[in-house]
Image (cartoon, rainbow, N blue to C red; front, side, top):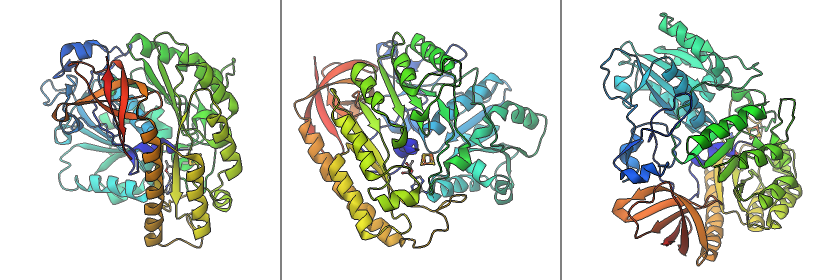
Length: 515
Ligand code: 5AD
Ligand code: SF4
C-alpha cells in the first residue's frame, strides 16, 4: 500500500524540518564529494549533511533551516549556452526519488539545474494525484505559465500525467510534455523529440514490464539514500489511483539493488531506504529468486550500511520473517509503516484491502513480541463511502489497540479510474472532517502517552539538521522518531550521536546530547 505518500500530507505527525538540494549531482559513481557549505566544513567532511524533502525544489534551501548547504551544481544564470531545467516534485517519496532519477537523465544530456523556474528552458512538474487536492495544486502551478511560458518547455510528469493524459494539453495548451511514471524509460527519447522541435510529446504506456533504471541519479539527500526495489502495484484497493497511474508491479533484480547499495555505501551513505508502493511484495525476478526478507538481510549486510528502512509495507505481505529479520539484524531499522486504512471489517472489505481487522492485529502482535521494540505507524482514511458511526468507532478502537507512534490520516477523496468513485452512501464532507478531527485527537493522546514513556531513554540519533535560532539539532532514531536536542558540540551534522530524551510532547521529542 502506498503510505509512501503519507509524509508529504497533513497529519498528526511530528514536526519535520526540511532541507534539500544540499549536494552536488551524482555523476556515475554517486560520490558525495564537492559539497560546499555555509555549515562548517568538518560537518560536511563527516560525509553527510541533511534531511530530505518531498519538494525537490532548491528554493527550500533558503527557508527550511538555519543550516544551509548550497548546491554548486545548481547554476543561477545561464552563461554557457547549455539548456537548463527546473524540476518541482509533489507527493510521495517514490516521486521524490523518481525526480532524482529524472534529474540524472537530464544532467546526463547536458542540462543544468536552476532553482528559479523563470530562468529555466525546461520546467517540469513531477505530480501526484492520490487525492483531489494534490491534483488541484498541480493545475494551479500550470496556470502560472498561461501567459508567460515564453518559449519554455513545460512538462508534466508522474501520476497526474498518467491519470489525465492528453487532457492536460486541453486544459493547459502551453504544456509540451506529458509523461507518466510507468513510461519514464522513454524519457530520453521524449526529450530528444522535444530538442528536435517536437511540440507535443507523450509517454503514457502502462504495459511496461521493466523498471526505470538510470545511469546517473542525482541524490538530493545527504543522509538517506533511496533505492526503488519495486514499482507499480498489483492490488486494487477500491479508493486508490496508484495501480492506474503507476501500472502493474515490477520488481528489480536483486543484483542491481545490491550493486546500488554498495555504490551508495562507497559514496559515504550509511542509511538506505528501500522504496515501493508495496515494498514487501518484492519478488526477485533474477535466477536467485530472493524473497523480500533475503533482500533486506543482504542490503543490511553491505559493508558501511548502518541503517536500512523500507516503505511502504502491505499488511497482506507482512510475514513473521520480517520481524525475525529485524530482531536478528541491528542494521534493519525498528520501524514498520503498516497502513491499515480502517478498523472496520465491513469498510476493509469495501476497500478491497484483502485482510481483516483480526489478521492485521495478528501482525501487530508479532511486532509487539519482537525482542527489539518496533515503532509502528499507519495510514488511515475516514469517510469512505458507507462508513457508519459504528465503522468509524471500530477505527478508533483499533488506534487504542495498536497504540501507533504516528498516523497519517486522510478524508476519503473520490478519484478517477477507481471502483469506489461511484459508490453510493457518500459521507458528507462536513462529517468526514469531523471524524478526521476526532481521529487525530484520539491519536494525539496516544502520542502524548507514548512519547512521555520515552523520557529517560537514550537513542542513537543520526543528525540531519541544525537550527541555530533555536539552539537545537534534529535527527532520527532507528525507530524513525524525530528528536530535537541540544548539544555543547558545534559540529554534529551527519554524525550518529547518543541523545537522552528529556521531554515528550504530542508531536515532538526533546533531548540532550550524551557526550
Ligand atoms: N482518498 C483519501 N486517501 C487516500 N489514500 C490513497 N487514496 C486515497 C483516497 N482516494 C491514502 C491512503 C494511502 C495514503 C498514501 O493515501 O491512506 O495509504
Ligand atoms: Fe497501496 Fe492499495 Fe493503492 Fe496498491 S492499490 S498502492 S496497495 S493503496
